[in-house]
Image (cartoon, rainbow, N blue to C red; front, side, top):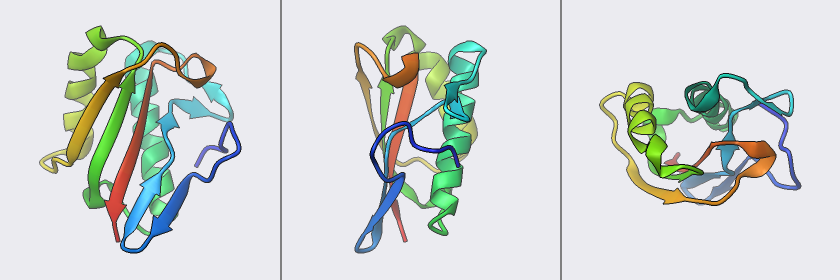
Length: 114
C-alpha cells in the first residue's frame, strides 16, 4: 500500500462499510510512467492493497467514484475497469475534473461492505 500523499487515512470503517480515500497511480510517492493505462493499473493495485488492509477485496466493493482529467479516456478506463472487476459491477459515478494530485490522470475512491 502506497503512503498517502496528504493528511488523510487510506481507509476508514463506518459500521458495515469501508470507505477508501481516492487512489491515484503512485508508487513510493511518484506517479507511475506510461500514461493512463499504467496509472489505472496502479490505481487498482493500490485499491486492492488498501482494501486488503481491512480484510476486503474488489469483490466487496459496492460503489466507486472515478475522477478523470480527460473524459476522452472514458472508454480506455471502462475496458480496464471491466478487466479488474470481472463480472462484479459496483455502482459507479465518473466525473471530469480539472486536475488531480501530482499530475495524475485518474483517481478512484470506493465504498465496500464488510
